[in-house]
Image 1 (cartoon, helix red, strand yellow):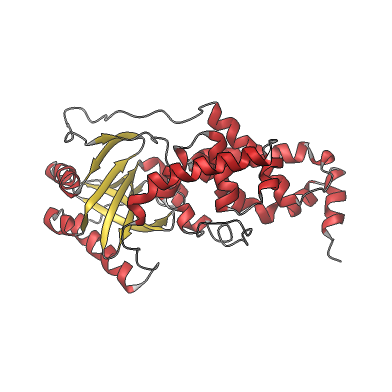
Image 2: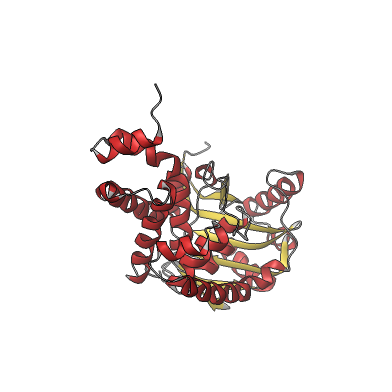
Amino acid sequence: MELTRADLMSRAQAGDAEAFRALTEPHRRELQVHCYRMLGSFQDAEDALQDTLFAAWRGLRQFEGRASVRTWLYRIATNRCLDAVRAARRRPAKQWDYPGIEPPEPTGLGEVHWLEPYPDALLDGAISVPLGPEARYEQTESISLAFVTALQTLPPRQLAVLVLRDVLGFHADEVADMLNTTIESVKSALKRARARMQGRLTAASDRERPPATDSPGENAIVAKFVSAYESADIDALVDLLTDDAFMSMPPTPLEYHGRNAVARFCAFVFGTGQTFGLLPTRANGQPAFGVYRHTPTGSHGAGLFVLTLSGDRISAMTRFEATVLPAFDLPQSLPSAQ
């Protein structure tokens, strides 16, 4: 006979670990995505999720059922993430570390150097959950790199309030209870957070919408990018960029704004004489590729590219280090073709 939620809770509070897993597992993926939005780092999100589940297990006897298990878990997760943000437990910025090879002068330095990509393979069942009536953002939009990056620039309380209210759709009184504050304080923080986010995302909102996932339009531009990059065809690559194209490479803070600046960096990479192969994947609801540097002994992981598309062009390229490849089930190296 299938146990009711009340039965599971009773057993879990009595120390039944399997009952606890049955209660929490349906929320695990969405909680991880929540932690990722709060922290901007896949690894930090996984750590925060584990802290959340451990805290929930230890505090289960105090659960009184005044809110749902889901809401209770979100309260714990949000506060664990706020603790991490306030403690500034972030990856440090990394300086360019290729001796004897100097990149072009950047047009800016990024402030969210701890940003990491989130594998689309883990989004199944995590961003399709029913949202509350207060949600203002589409699920796919709220996991994009641009959105997650903008979130990281908010003060901690504003960050939590905006995610809980505008992304997940919790009511103001629920958020106030989660954060142990007043409804008026929640409303004030939300107003300031919305203004900051609007300022950060205005340029992106003016661009053409990207083609639908796995549509002919998306497949066409992805195929052109792969062809241009693998053949080191700088002209073909530049033709794919919007005028305001942007390139970043966390945790290295170098940023290149504008088609010409991005073109200079890509020409610099191709000018080193190295050649690369790409393996397709997806991150943050966007096309992505494992990047492999060809050598006589094989092809070795050099990083991961995530593309932001606008119409039939590329508006942003974000390059991450090869350390993120395992999260996407991509190998660190490929055997030689010979």
